[in-house]
Amino acid sequence: MSPRAALLALAVLVCGCKREAKPAPAAAVPIALFVDDRQVATSANLSATARPLVEVVSGLPDPASWLAVIAIDADGKATTVLAPAKNHAGTPPALSAADGQVRFGLAKGGKLDGAVGRVAKVIIKTKDDRGAIAAELAAQGHGGHGGGDSAGNRHDGEGERPVPTADLVIAIKGAAGESTFTGDKLVPLPTITAPTGDTQTPGWSLLDILAAAGLSDAKAVSLLDSEGAGLRLEGADFDRAATILYVKMNRGGQLRFRRYSKRGEAWEMTGELRGLAKISVVD
Image (cartoon, rainbow, N blue to C red):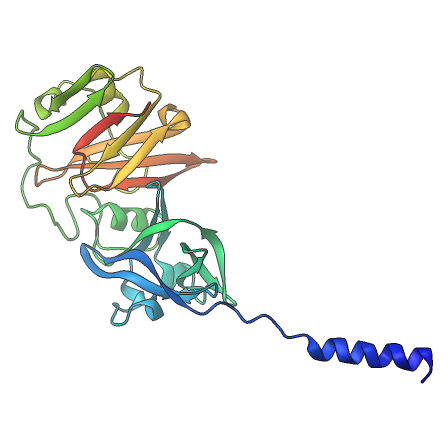
């Protein structure tokens, strides 16, 4: 056999021995999946291939009814996709997994477009969240179900918004020890409104609350709601020009927190807690 023929035979043999690596099979990974306030799953079978949410959990509402999909990572940072069926037709919200970590993005050719990692919770919104999401949709020209807290589906009661009293208590943990901050101390603070969505409902800046609670020198704080969900704030979060830390009281007398970050000339919600039960200074 000539040297050339021998090389060709060896090449064929080597190529014949090669096998394409099979993708890792789907495996159950922990992820909290909600439709509005109702939890529909605590785990999902995911692989490296993007899997649309409608395939992850059976029996989900028609995607055309989804006002928004919110993915919250392990640090409490929120990524929101508004009206996905209308704004992202053909690229549905989806999940994948790698190294036991859940990723969220828009499915495109089996991969995730604009993926975010370390996702711990996904919420599919089909009802307006006291009008805020619907108002944000309306502001962007996507319709919706009314605006502000005075329209749409009210989940926190009709009537006037209550005035915070001493019965409302936020636990405080700082360098000086543990204490409480009561709702009556919110009343004299200056009010602010959200920069997008429901821009009518008055609330307070968390920075003013921290100052009133004696925590104005804190470099980092951790916020917790009554269910144990947390959000860490530090660095640019305390820059009023770049971030708005908005706290409001709903009609049911509960505090809600949202972080808005400036992206160019627009504001984007980048964190949310459905309650504010404790503020701790982080060393």
